[in-house]
Image 1: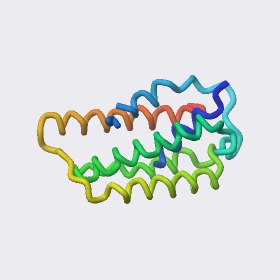
Image 2: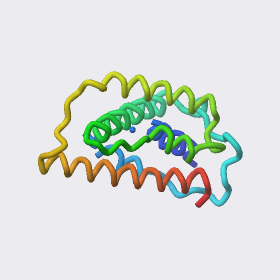
Image 3: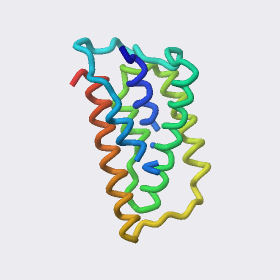
Image 4: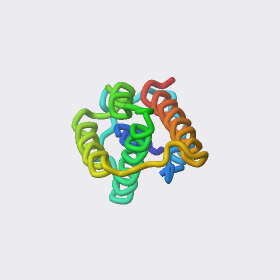
Length: 147
């Protein structure tokens, strides 16, 4: 059983390469939710092994890249607030806060980067990023809400 997947997604959540294609991979690697819904705040960072923690941090950083990219292109995804709503009651608050803090630092570190939002390639990346987010949000909703 992969208890950690909701934490990985939630973090990769709260928080945003497609190099930007990492997001669909995250969405596709999640196992189906078990028949039981997780208990309130059942998942937390303490459940992670070191390799899982490293993967989680990589995903948080990837989502930060996506957040900055889409915001710069006039399509802010507001990932942190969206994911916080999805994982409320599923992931412990202290784990969410830790991940949100890491996410905000990763976003801030890229705030001044320039992005291609108008070329065909740039528009393709916007579409891929938004689709990846849609898939991830659907997976998180399914995992945390049992839906």
